[in-house]
Length: 88
Image (cartoon, rainbow, N blue to C red; front, side):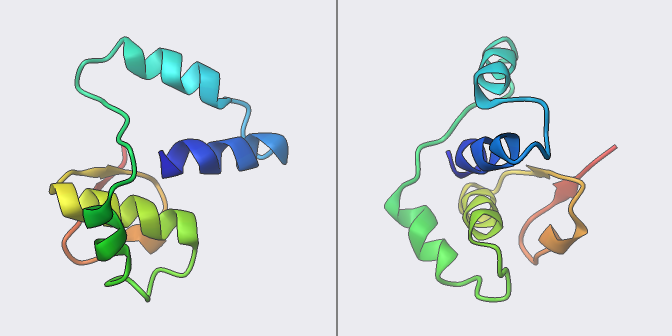
């Protein structure tokens, strides 16, 4: 859910056109994607990532590491050990 909260902020500031309702609707039609609630294991992983300065990025990386999931982002700052970042 950290990415949804960050999207709200970016949308409010006019940095992205896609808003959270549109993202949630789009993801609902793709069974390969799911939205995850923030949980204790992710927060504990967050504590192991002090090099990731942006708190939203840190939460997102922590979730990916905790789940062994790929991270879809063009942000090269998210190239963190233990996470495979993909972008085409």
